[in-house]
Amino acid sequence: MPTEQSRRTVCVIPGDDAAPEAMDATLDALRVLELPVDFDIVPTGAELAPIPEVEREQFLREHIDAADGVLFGSTNGTTGGVTYMRWGKGTFANVRPIRWRPGYRSPLADPAGIDYVIVRENLEDAYIGIMGDVEDIRRAGLAGPRARLAYEGEGRYAVKIITRQGTENVARFSLELARKRRGKLTVSAKTNMLPKTDRYFCEIVAEVAQDYPDVEFEQFIIDDMAHRLVLRPHGLDVVLLPNLYGDVLSDEGAATLGGMGLAPSGCYGHDFAYFESAHGTAPDIVGQGIINPTATMLSAVMLLEHLGFGDAAHRLDTAVSDVYAAGEALTPDQGGTAGTADFAAAVVAELRR
Ligand code: ATP
Image 1 (tube, protein in one colour):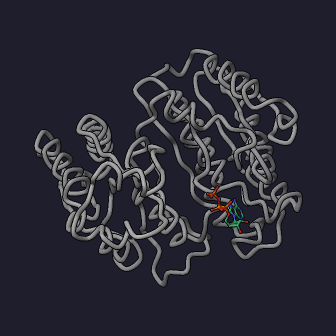
Image 2: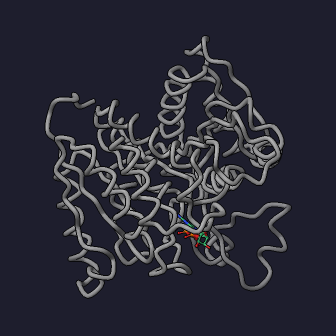
């Protein structure tokens, strides 16, 4: 991990639709911290769009490779860069903290104390991109008693792959994280229906967990897990999930806090990490100046921690909490009437206090 003293370069990719508005607000807050950081801000998706896709990807790669960390808005596919940062750079662990703060508009009766982290395996499972026509597997002779109907007429398939190496990597990462937090790991998948992939995933995690006797270990079937995130979230610490379930359930977790505008994330590999809100580009509110920048700001907090700027990370995190506690500059998704810029100004005022 880099030391606090050394100068760092952060590549900022504002992204598409309303994401650059949240990024501008986040940069306002980051600049107040006066860190030894050079921000290499690349153009927004709208500005990049006229450039042919191959050149755009190459341009982004050069900026990503030259940086010590990347802060990413969100893309609808125009900006791109995600495939490179995820599969090209091997960022196998997607960390999505779910922590309620006073002032968040949670739909739950008792959200106080919700504080856990979803670690989503980021490279495998149903996201490996192998998809096709059922005709292909019919020809390959992959029949089974339950597949008979699927083979009649037209249809499509998607392949799901879980590897031992990929699972061990993310299991170790999660167990180390649990050790730094409250010492508990929960793993979940559809172990009963999908023994070849999902039970395998959980078995490997349980195996690796034996090297961490100090970490409490528990396992639930994924449907039970979905239910627990709403009804019994308080006891959770680190929750490890395969890619697809992690993608879906982290949105559920964000909803229990008060919505997607509150959900940061970081994607970590062995020697590269990038940070982005867990939400998409919010195209329905583009240009209105009301996107909640909290998720992007808290992703920046994770970036600063990663770069070794722990004190600055703590300052920004506390400033965001203080703005929510005061409740005077909240965006419409949190029940307020403030715009993105007003929220940013309130965070900046807290940082300057
Ligand atoms: P993706 O598929 O890229 O994850 P999505 O289709 O799930 O994207 P989002 O962009 O996450 O869509 O938006 C879902 C809804 O949540 C939209 O109504 C959007 O306006 C709202 N939303 C998302 N992020 C924010 C935010 N930061 N502030 C306010 N509203 C948001």
